Length: 58
Image 1 (cartoon, rainbow, N blue to C red):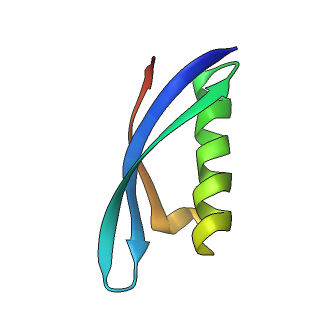
Image 2: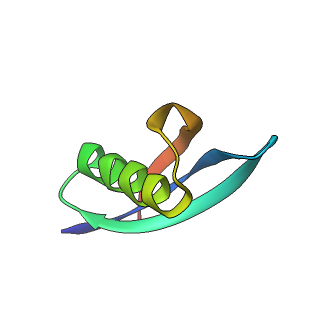
């Protein structure tokens, strides 16, 4: 498993907040799905309110 660094923004009230997450995953697609799941559950957001800007290997 490789570590991926994913950065993006999510809707927080009336503004967009930046985030950076490091997740361990088999590939980029699974890493993105993990981040959608984490951010969505932590902040009660749907996927259309989460924007992933970049995905890179650590």
